[in-house]
Length: 192
Image (cartoon, rainbow, N blue to C red; front, top):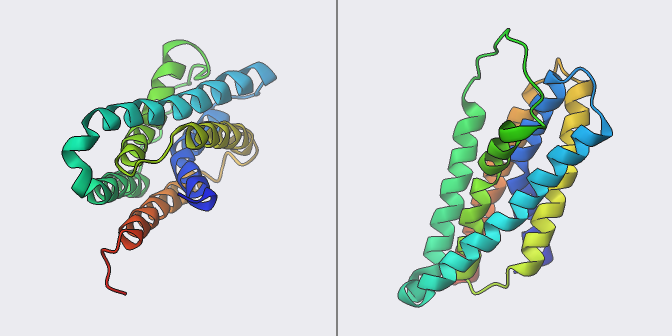
């Protein structure tokens, strides 16, 4: 898999973290360096670990599904991409209740897991394609952390422009679909 494809996957996976970090930035009155570090560290760490876990699980069953690996990878990426598209197109109801600091405690852990679940499927897909996971996991984690930092501060600055997170998630879904189709193309599924 090329570095460009890995970066595309990393950016697509970071869209959930980006969208959530924008929301966190909007909800916090001031963003400290500590809050920025906590959220970006956890989002990046979980985004890096989930593909490793998915890759490990995929390798455990790889021999059983070897002939269909490219189809499985496509289906997983398409499912994740479709889910991102669906979530982006849903309209969220805003609450008037004050929000607590989402960069602390169980809220942060739950957000970290929720924004990185898609990476589990991507890691599984990579194992089906016999791709080493170390470099992609590191890149995915770094990109997620960078997007989290950017999203938090962007959310703070442009709290009135919440549509940005919707567009980011839409782009992430489209990118994952494109990468899935490219995997099929590279495996000779399309005759052209």
